[in-house]
Length: 161
Image (cartoon, rainbow, N blue to C red; front, side):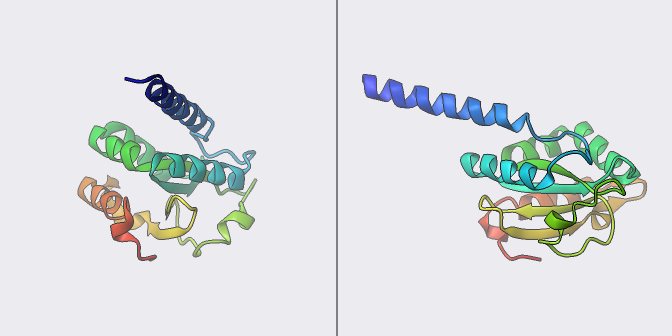
């Protein structure tokens, strides 16, 4: 291996580490005090660097189905692995304290929460997902969630809906 190759590998590794560290700055809960537009822009930057898409998870700490979705993802390793491999997940608060109207007005109206928007690595809307379509009983249907994640994870599902 040449010195130049070693430097390029080191630079790539540092960039990857920096990107990973930056992902830790994204919210892990619905926080009305966060700058949602900045969080989404940050997620798009990470997705662009990593060749992924963004899922904007809109909801609130008040939302029981939002917490059910979080628990569903945490308890299904294959779903979590698919999300980690293909997406950058960012939570955007919607509550009486902060409705994030300016950001959310960019996309189709939301009927219920949580709601997922899939963005490409340039921040363009690819898909709007009503999560009630992913529910089953008092939880989420694993096959439906995985199908949705797979469908919108690449340019093959590029039609906006």
